[in-house]
Structures are given as C-alpha cells and as structure tokens.
Length: 458
Image (cartoon, rainbow, N blue to C red; front, top):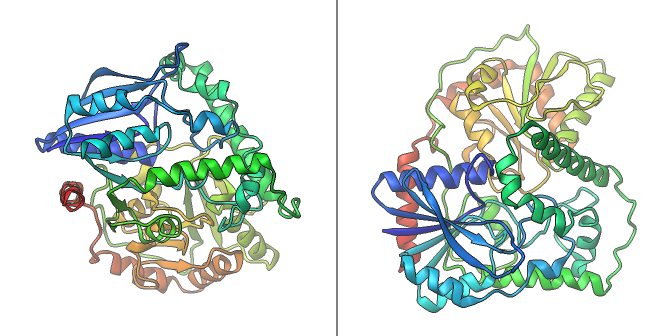
C-alpha cells in the first residue's frame, strides 16, 4: 500500500506527542513493507508560490516539503486570519498526488494545510483519513479553552476568539519560526534560549488569561470577530472532506461530533517506546503519598487545580503527601508544602521517575484527545488519577484500574485524601493493573491502523 502522511515535520525540529506518534507510525509502516511518503509544511520564500519539493529519505520514508504553505501557529493562536485561509493553486497538489499516486492520505494535523490539497485528493479519488490529535481548526488555540479558563462550547460568533488570540504571534514571527535558518539553528544554545523564552511567554500569557477569570463581562461581536467565523468555516469545510476519522479516544470523538458529521472509529494510540514494564508494587500506610505530575504546567492542563487542592489540604494541616513535578524547565511559585520541581526529563528517565511515585495525576480541564503519559504510567504498573476530560480515561475502569474524577479542586482533593487514608486502594488498583489489557504492542496498533485505512477505502 502507498500511504501519504501529512504531519508537522520530523524531530528534532518538531516534537511532542503528535510528532512522536506520526513518526513512529510511518517508520513501522515502512518496516512492514508499505511505501510511505511524508508531506510537511515548510518554509516561506519571497515569491509566495506554493511548491512541493522532495527533501530526502528518512528511515525508509520519502520526505517532501510544502514550500509556502499556510502558516503554522502551533499553540500560539491566530491573529491575521486572512493569511490562514489564503487560496493556493490546486494544480500543484494534483500534480504531486498524481506523481506519487497514494492509495490513502493520512492527515495528522490541519496546521499549514490548504483546503485545495484536500480538494485535489477528492478530485483524483484518493481517500482521506484524519487522526484527531487536537482541536485545531475548530479552535485557533487548539484546546477549546476560553480566556476565562472554561471549556469553550460557544465561541460567540468569533467574539471569544478575538479575546483568546489577542497575544497570538505576528505573521512575521511565525514565518521566522518556519524558516530554514530557524530549523538549522534550533539546537544552538542562543536559539534554544530564544525558543524557550517564546514558550515561557506563551505560558505566562495563557496562565494570566486564566488567572483573570471574569475580567471580560461580555463578548462584543464585531467585523473582526466574523473573521474567526470565516476561519472556523474554512476548517470545517476541510473536515467535511475527510472520508474516515481515526478518533484516538471517546473524548475526541464526542467533541468532533459536535461540529462535523464524522464517519470513523476509536483506536486508542500508543508509540513504539511504550513497553510492558508492569511489576508488583507495594504501598505503606506510614509513608507520604507520593504524587507525580508530568507535563506542561499550563492551567488548561489542570496544574492549578492540583496545587489549589493541595493548598486546601495544607490549610487543614494535612501534609502527608509529596508532589514531584516534571516537565517545565523553570520552577513556579505554587506555595504548596512538599512540592519539588525537577525540570525537563528524558524518556529514558521514566523508569526511575515511576519508581519514586505512588500515583500519577492528569488533572486537565481541557478536553484532551488522549495523553500518552497516562498509558506510560500504567505500562509501569503505576495507578493514575485522571479527570473526565482526559481522553486516556478510555484505558481506565474507575476504582478498578485507576481513578476518574471531575475536573475541579474538590474532586481532586477528595481522591487524594482517600488515597492518603487508605493505601489499600492503591494496592488494589496496582494489582489489577498487572492483568488488564493495555494497548502496548505498537506493531499490533499499526496493523489496526492499516485495517482502518481499508475501512476508509470502501
């Protein structure tokens, strides 16, 4: 089978769960004898004419770059809407698709992707599969969280988008971050520090918006807000051209079905480095409850819910816990006793990290489409606490193989108290984790994706 993937690019220039999953999937498909192509949104030049150019072979994958694609905002939002819905020459895409003649096109992101690409595929008769890694297209900021830190169920004809995207990067900065020089120099310390500064500023912007809950009393619908209506309609039109959806969780399926008619199926995702490392654990009632949090500390990830719940415990004189935070390079002043920030971690460190925690928590308030860290913890036999917003809750039977709570401080506080009062709850869950079925065989997962392609083809 000939498979054309569209994703953000390759490591180390691109990183994160989407890149990890799509790269592992492409490499394994190539190893299984499929003919695999990758198209990614590349740099911009002065002529502004879209072209597709062959780059190189990467681990058995034929890599192509789209020059002058649409801009790629990542998590930073969109300010200049017209640049993101700019028309492109459909004949460029028809020529490329006819040249490689794929059996199926697998899209992992809508960022940088012109609608004309999908129109070309439809005209030629190539089926399109889409994996729901995030909500970009429906939400310019990706996570469907308002400036008030609430789930966005109504964007008020774009008026909420105006507020949420006030601090979006300029087109010039986005072009810089997609430039060849940025790509080449990204690993040089000065540019790494620049990238970190941009990321930290983005985090501060997001957290500041959520901290100021209530500072916007009403959302004013203006001509500018209707730009975001145009933007959403543009991407909804793209989604309507998808033949088959690969939902990576029931949460993602439920959210996408609110906006577009979706034919598809749920297949919980994994990646090649997740192995079955489960072994029996024991817990002592005399010891602190060791809570682990791994990932970004943005508030839409629920980090503030966790710390506020722990602060409430401190106020009640309860300190029989320890919180270890991994992921951010910089520390936050959370004013919670027994909290330790460890900074960035490598995947090779997970065994040691999980050996030193009793329970992992994923307290997101956003509708996470999945969450690899939950599966990674379970693969080591670590009990997990997730909110009902986390897509990886599909892997958990509440109070049997983990704990599912509401996304609020009180629910998080109650489960922590329960686990501190009775380590037997943890013991029972840890024992059950040894025998439940988890999606840990990546080769098997790739086989299921191939079968999903066939489902989308007929």
